[in-house]
Length: 105
Image (cartoon, rainbow, N blue to C red; front, side, top):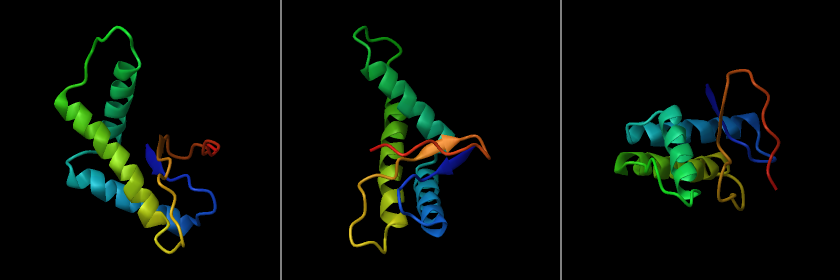
């Protein structure tokens, strides 16, 4: 799996800078991108249910929060030279070589 930054107008070099920053942030918190994103999915499934089951642990909630912050870190790093950086990088974890998903607007 590979991490992608999806910021419209960002060069490949800027995107790579954002990816490196996000991975470094996650590593500093003892997480891989896979672990953090799995925690996001569990948190989001749990928070969207009216019947609360399979509640995320405190560690999973912290891992999900780390993914959210890694997304913001990636945006700041990617767009460090821009007059105004977007708030998030729309991080995606995709199979190596897979086509990027369209950007959200």
